[in-house]
Image 1 (cartoon, rainbow, N blue to C red):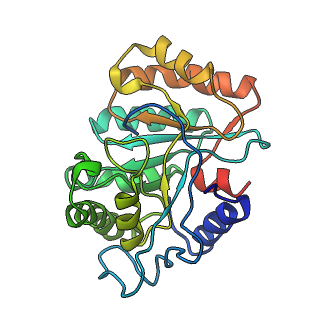
Image 2 (cartoon, rainbow, N blue to C red):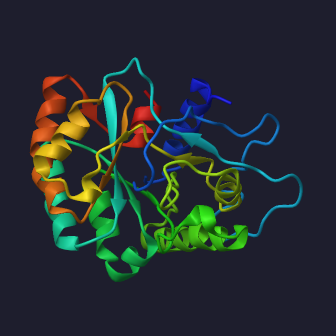
Length: 259
């Protein structure tokens, strides 16, 4: 079922109104999916990460793969892990280029580098959930998957006061029905996918990363990228310059979906 634009706008607007601050897997594309009719996920405030599963029907989170195609904005999204020094260098490049991005953090990375959560938010970016330990979430049992999602959410809440709006599954571009159910149980309305993979995690060199992004990017694109890779840092000035020349503004996912 395709996510209706009004649904997406409602999710982003609601998150922004409540002050919520807010890549990795197989390639490919799939249409956005939403919860089946009559089983919309409960609001995060009522069923936040770490809360027990509610009684009644199983709720399933939707999935977002891209934003509106009629607005010249894009979202650069980053797997949050790796060398904090490289992460800070990337944040400096983003600040210099006037870009706002979305970082989906791994919980164990936040355990080791708690200061990075504050640094990301201080730069005007948003922070989301990329599981506790970045295992193959699709292969996990439902309880294990829930523990991975809620464990990262707890760390985000402890460090920032919010679990973040977005959850991205680990080692998978798209969330399975089981994962979407556990994401909803943990309080997330939507799972965040992407429609453009930069392949920067394969370390192909900065020129290849630039080409992978700029050859296919367009209005509404959500791009999968990674912290902790030198090639990504070196590619960022050319990527931001290329976006500017094309009239594409890099914004957070929440901003993109509110367009």
